[in-house]
Length: 181
Ligand SMILES: Nc1ncnc2c1ncn2[C@@H]1O[C@H](COP(=O)(O)OP(=O)(O)O)[C@@H](O)[C@H]1O
Ligand SMILES: [Mg+2]
Image (cartoon, rainbow, N blue to C red):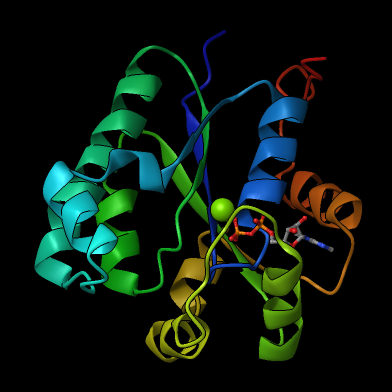
């Protein structure tokens, strides 16, 4: 039997653990995985490389591209795991319009812990103002979003504990919670 696709959007500010958790989830579930950053149009890449902050009008076509990818995967019978900061509810609303069930997993934590993890991360440059501005922009999951099955998790826990919590909360049918390795 073909189940409708599920899309897990791992969200949160930079350094909250999105890439780490999404990679582990997609490995365990055998679901298609993508990073939102891969979907930026060239005009956004040009802006970002010049240090010009993106405006919401730059983000709509990018988020639409991501939504289209999710829908394409769903039509091909695949569920997905996506990393996307998805800081504002309006961004999440656009992603939610993808075909299939869209659930957000907000990796939330103290600014000091996130900042510490950012320092320890290799191969990424992080301007010191990025975290405060991201935290100021962040609109946490609303009661309605949480009621629809989206999750907020505290990142003081280990990646293994977070994965276990996510898989437990999703109550996936056992034939889907397979291990791909
Ligand atoms: N739950 C966790 N516990 C400890 N360290 C973590 C956890 N999640 C992520 N990390 C580490 O924190 C850093 C940032 O994680 P990353 O997945 O790159 O975040 P993001 O993709 O949200 O920017 C990485 O060095 C990663 O190994
Ligand atoms: Mg990342």
